[in-house]
Image: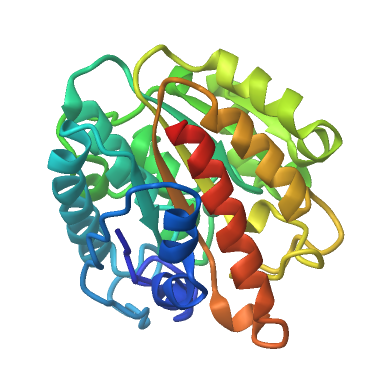
Length: 296
Ligand SMILES: [Mn+2]
């Protein structure tokens, strides 16, 4: 399923990702890897525009409505036993996936959050007003978050700290607020450096921390070394972090985990690789190999 939506982003661009991944041959590569694919299509296209009435939490109502729609669409699909591949869009899509997993009622769900950032800012901790790096603050219902989004999926919090393991965080890019919250809540974090040094080992440590219920993996492509794979909206990751091949190793480890039910991909902006569009096919190939392991 695609979520061609950049309402929570810094600018338009990530809304183009589902179409770009389809054109790069993702469905065909999944089938060639032996998977049975049902393309559930896309939710409505929404391109970012400035929200001058709510500058510090831009387009929050639109984002909330779209995530509720995502959770509703994923529910029946997960209930019939399908694996969900969700193409964002931005990192807030992880909330829609976790809401759907919680509703399954098959145990406490866990989230492996593969991201260069914690994404636990709030409208009060930054002046940017982009919800894409505030998603998990809303899942955890941290002080200062937007009530409507924190309450969008039933009783808050959607997630407790013990349900999330962060993998690939670049600590020097975290805001002071994020560092304080991570320390206060004892968040389980594996750094970008540790992920690149031992991808499978780092993933195993993170997976070990998570509860026994259904597992979702969220893959923000900003975790990647941007020079190796120029895919992310955020270009901070030049010459640091795992290569696409190393990230594939880590996600393959997660794919071997019997709890896995969903993979979401966020923050891919296809205009970033206009000069080297082949990277999209390379990325699609990695995703297909990872999901083939999950299915096997
Ligand atoms: Mn992110």
